[in-house]
Amino acid sequence: MNDANASDAVERRVDGCLIRIRGLFPTLRPSEQKVAQYILDNPSEVITLPVTDLARKSGVSDATVVKFCQRLGYSGYQHLKITLAAELASFPTPIYGEIVPGDELPVVKAKIFNMNKKSLDDTMRMVDDRELERAVEALLQAPRIHLYGVGASGLVALDAEHKLLRIGLDCHAFPDPHTAMSMASVLQRGDVAIGLSHSGATRDTVESLETARGAGATTICITNVMASPISKVADIKLYTSVEESDYRSGAMGSRIAQLSIIDVLFVGVAQRRFEETMEHLQKTRAAVRSKRIPT
Image (cartoon, rainbow, N blue to C red; front, side, top):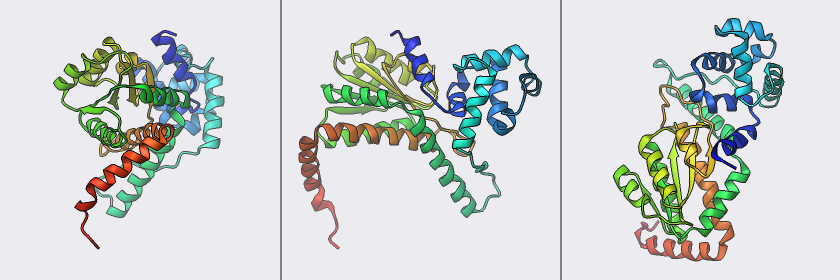
């Protein structure tokens, strides 16, 4: 299966209409983004609207609405409405609201915790179990594991490095782009490289993952955007589903979702090499026991 078909297959497995729209939003044409934004802002209204009314409210043509639906993998507007109605009935979307300067701290706390829970729920529905299984199998067989990411994604890469090193895997995170590119070039067939990028378009991360793939490594991406540049250079695609606001831009919900996927991969690997995992964990715990202050 080529990259385009593989990407399409993953997109078709996403059940949530709103999740699918958010995941593909950055890759849509400007006119299609108008339709997408109206649906995201008014999902309950849209399930009652004829195609002509949605087109008028979005400021586009009827044909654009139909093409938008097909771009998402639906046969047409009616198919999208049926799927959206089922999603709203099964997973009603609470109104959490944006954080505004005048919010009291208890309100900020409630909004952040609720949006974080929503990010995890949406990501759990978005990430594909078959892709997770492929990722775990690749990690189990890998002589070396590299992780690439910058900014908040780089912190997640370092967390993954710590977890996997503790159970005896040869794993290294490279938040510095130059080092990442250099080390990616010396990977070999069977090695695994994981690129983390919320936008899927972080140049340094994409180029490092592409270099690793060219060297023969199996590549995995963890990103929020389907059909993004990083997904095109990844053999295995793990998608998050996170809405970021001005206060939460890029470093809050996305980080929590990425960390959760890393945790799933870590536990998946640990389960399949249980005895080795427990042996390494016992050794590492013993090694730092003296660092604890007696109580």
